Amino acid sequence: MIARKGNEPEAERAEAYNQEGLQAYADWNIEKAVDRLHAAIRLNPDQSDYHLNLAKALARAGDFDQALRALAEFIRLEPQSEVAERFVQLFASGLDEVETTLTEKMTQAAMPIELIGAAMQMWLEYRIAVGREPLIVRKPETWAAGLDYTVRKVNLRQVTQKEIGALYGVSGPTLRDRFESLVAALDVMPCDYRYFVGDQNPLDKLVEAAELLEQLENRFREM
Picture 1 (cartoon, rainbow, N blue to C red):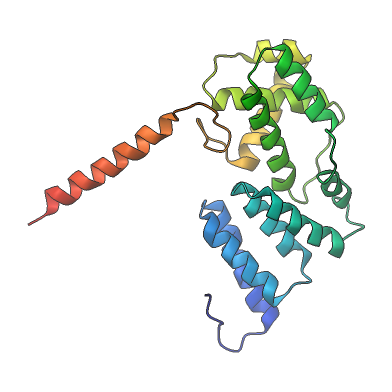
Picture 2: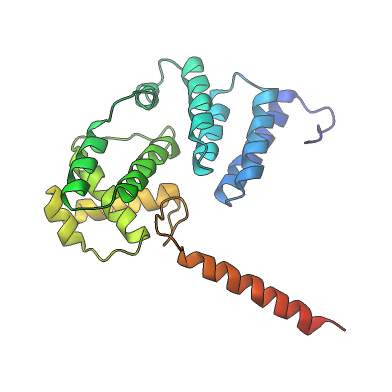
């Protein structure tokens, strides 16, 4: 439970929780982020940004059902928002142009269905993560190429920008721009657990090594 702070007006306390949630989101403390943003919403449920921020945190946690619920609240509060239409599209049952292109090209390149699914998940999370920022999709091939390239890099598959560019018909600078946008918004790392589809993630070994090092340090310092 989060303790209430003195006699501060509820709106101020709500904003304080929102800022704590955003910082926790940036620090990858997702459980804390979700907790603080829920607290902000309880105090000020009509602040649409809090629902949008909660959706971003839930999407990063992989809880897309709850993320869409939070987006539904945002849309209810701001039905005429410039980004509302983009979020409404997330509730559609069919594929959008980027997803259609991505599926066709990755299948053509004989990529496994799990990798295609990871790229689709990346696109879903990205559309939520950019929040109010404009997302222009004039040529779906550019975003599909960026997703394909990024998810292959995450999964340590050998591929060049030239190969992806030729597959999707996009230039090198455009592909790099899409790649950098995805990595920045989603904070993507090599072997990222959200998008890694192999049986054994190399990051597991790093975690095990860190835990072993901590154990050795503790033993070394024992008196």
